[in-house]
Each structure stands twice: as C-alpha cells, then as structure tokens.
Image 1: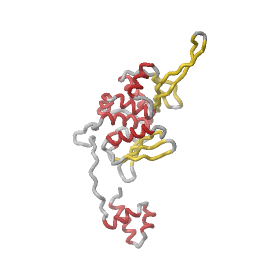
Image 2: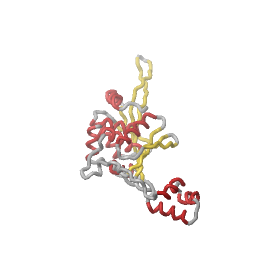
Image 3: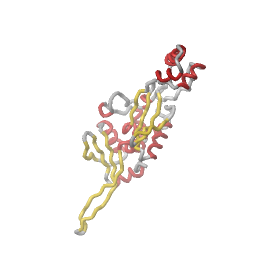
Image 4: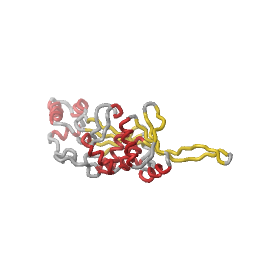
Length: 257
C-alpha cells in the first residue's frame, strides 16, 4: 500500500531518535508496519490482478451474466472513487434490509476477478459493498468526475453486446438498486358495492435521463410494457404494471430479499 518514499521517510524519522509511537501518530501508519520495514523495506510482490480490458486484445469479462448484473447495480447505486495510495474503489450501496442483495452484489464483484478483495462497510441504513482495484474504470468506463446524472452515460459496444445477451441480469441489477416491487391498490364498484383490489407493480427511479433510457430500451427488448410515471423532484419513475409484464418481471427478477 505504501510506496518506497513513504517507507524511507518513516524510517528516517526513527533514525532521528523518535519513538515508534510518535512516528506512527505523525504519519498515520501503523506501528506494526513500520516495525516490519526495519527488516524489509521493499513491498512484497503481488501477482497482478487480471483485467481482460487491459489486454493487447481486449475481451469482455469471463462471466458476462455476473457483469450485466453488476453493471445494473453500478448504474443504480454505485460509484467509483480514487484511492489515496493509487487505484480505485468500487462502492455499491445496498440497503441492509436486503441481506440477499448484499450477498448477490458481493458474489458478482468477486466473479469479476479484477478485485483483490470485497469488504462490507456498515453505514446508517445501508451496507457499502466495496472493493479495491486498479481496473474498475476499465470495466466501468462510465466512471467520471461528478454525479452520474450530471454527465452523459452511454454503454460502449462491448457492454451493449453483454446487455443484449443478458437483458434480465442487467434489469435485475437496475431494479435491485434503484427499483422496487410494490403492491398497489385501487377500488371499483362491483354490483353496486365499492370493492378494493390489489395488484403488484414495479418501479425504477433515477435522476439520469441516460440511465432511464438504457433501462427502457432494455425493457423494450425483453418484451416488458412500461410507462413513465409521476416524478418526485428531479427523479423520474418508470412503472411496469400490466399483468403480463409484471409476470415476466416476477419470473426473472422478483422482489428484493
């Protein structure tokens, strides 16, 4: 994690007669790490993580279905940020009410083979499924400065091919992140008596017009009827309410768990 210059600086402070604890407090480096550098200053070599997009002949991820799902999660509730010591951290926000979603997200990241590890960081009301890698922007070229709804979001040709081949995995990622399945109700008069009836409905909500368009294009390709519903503030809602389309969504996506 620490480069040679940082390691030499910490050891130089020790060489001035400083205590291990004082150097640790000043540099923010653990005492155990500094103690190890007294014996070996060079970092241990690690095998390079695989990145199919960095190869001389770029290839799609080895598990395209898992990638399609993770792409949906990233476009919905994900972000990529730079790491202080180089590389990038992918973070997917998952509500802690859905442990099955957290497990599915973690599994999808692991299958990418671009990450060193996956960790869970608890926040108020959610869990950040996080993973460090130098290659996340290679796999998610939509990464860029600012919020996703403030910049253009388009799929590259290789991503589009994956989504076309695995539309339901991609839609499952979108609806598991920024979507929901709810039970609506309405009333109607039957035989002179007003009765209440309930029906399931799916919603997808996002503030990016580009992500909404990608979602609706994929719904069209999957044969799902949708309509634009009322919006709240700047967010737009996509509604799926027709019985046949809801049945399709239930068969391939289903409620969060």
